[in-house]
Image 1 (cartoon, rainbow, N blue to C red):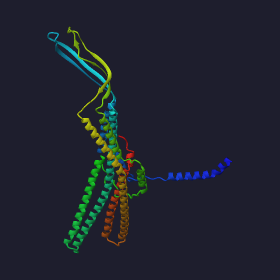
Image 2: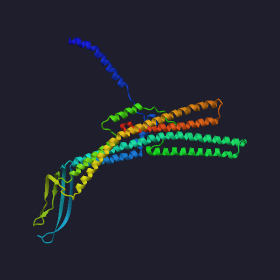
Image 3: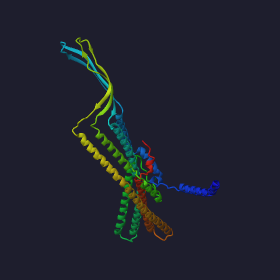
Image 4: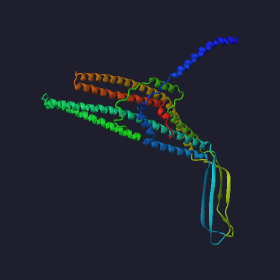
Length: 458
């Protein structure tokens, strides 16, 4: 009877299993691409970012700071291990003896070699080692943060070079257009159609266009020099750079998913929060050490020493005292004029301050992420608006080119359409730049920058 019931349920179980499998396959097939960053559109920028990690002067200094932190960590851990100290002194003496007339010359040798191992210091040595490890971790975070800031400046600098090149191309076209207008006016003066005084306007327009071109060139050169200082390598030339940033598809779904994951975390994780948390731990360990500073500290000691040599009545006979010792040494600072009381209060205040900063940063982390999300949405709307204007200007220019080819309009009208297109392209480039950098800023606030996820350790 039970077997028949099982057979009757088998078709239903199969249907449910197939439905579950299809739903799982559908879930697996649905993927969210991560937001695209500037280096995803420009392979040259990706290689620049990789090279900057090795060649940038800023990163070279950051690696030196890591070496400093590594040495400090070794010093902090040294308190957990035994120390071996020794001294030796050899003297030629001339002694005035009360039991002998005259002076007695002698050679005296002193030495002491001792080993000391901390046994019980109320956790101070372990706390110091832990503080050293945290400071080394902070140095690594500073290294990552330094590279993140450097990468942000390089990204923005590279995109700005493209935008400045676009402005330079437009300025050159404007200068050529003004020069052509001046030549046409001069021809009209020769033909007697206008007076010479009417050349003032075209000449001023040409000077303004030349000034605009020179300003655009100076801005491009300054940006290139700044880019070289950042990367430690030659900046891309004008020929290597494109005149236009590619059209960018907004990825609201991908950024929305990352933002939702960040908000769902019970304890948000960002570089700033992680640093504040570690600084709070340092303040807590320091406070513990201050509380135990006046307590007795116990060490195990082991060593050998030779003391001052003595003489018998016979000055030719002398002997030295050599001691071998092992035992427990207690060091106790019993009273220090209430200095420790002040140190404890100061360290407690620093701990409370660190805890307050961490709590405030936790509350601000989600607010900053929301602000970055809103800024990205506004940048997206601005980019889409300028993209539509650029498309309209491109279509209008195409129409004017066809009209000029058919002889329906003059060169001056075509040049005006071309100038309008260059202006719209510059605006679109700037809007795309702002959108990409807003996306970088959001990923930074969410601690999701893929450039740092694969950052190699120095």
